[in-house]
Amino acid sequence: MSNCHRLEGKVAIVTAATKGIGLAIAERLGREGAAVVICSRNQKNVDDAVNYLRSQGIARVEGIACHIANSEHQRKLIDFTIEKFNKIDILINNHGINPAFGHILEVDDKVWDKLFEVNVKAGWQLTKLVHPHMVKNGGGNIVFNTSQSAYKSPPHRFIEGIAAYGVTKTTLLGLTQALAHGLAKDNIRVNAIAPGVIKTKMSEVLWSGNGDEGEKEMVDAMEVPLGRLGVPEECAGAVAFLVSDDAKYITGETILIAGGVHARL
Image (cartoon, rainbow, N blue to C red; front, side, top):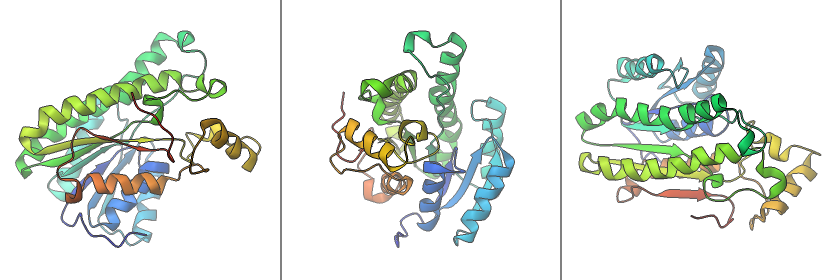
């Protein structure tokens, strides 16, 4: 548990934040002093996550149901945040889907479009919406959650599960750099994290077979030097650093959180 209070007075939006990495990020930012707005598609899941965060001593947290690729819902998310906390300092684009399993050339056109609509376009749209609010504040921070698969495909037996997903995450690397350059004049920093295999519901298909043996098989196949899978809190710590003043001379960068696996373009 962090005792840092680097984000006192800041207001953060964290998308897809009712479980896994998103929930861990929301909790970490809240512990560091930020007011937090979380969103996800299901209102009950949002309510449960808000209640959990409040039970952990994070009083300034609100939540709203949001289909992240829906432009009307995006605007409601921004308006809701302004209504509750009067400003926006931090945007964590944590959302992502992977409905495509199979060879990359067998992905249906509609599924391909949906992957890019959610994983890439939605974060770009949200960035456009928060931009004027951050300019008004004199600056801000934006973080994208990309993936180790943006750099390096998993070993062959795992690749067909996430090949198309990985392409969208590679696109986010370019979007991060383009936005970092474009928004630097407004004192808005844009960075990303690239998690390796983190123990979440979304990644479970890659490592959950045969209990502990399934995890070991994945670690061995990925040749992870630290010898284990990651946990969401390790991603949250990196995000908290990136949006704090400890990283105020860092923009356009991606932190790889993969246990020492070498993966760069």
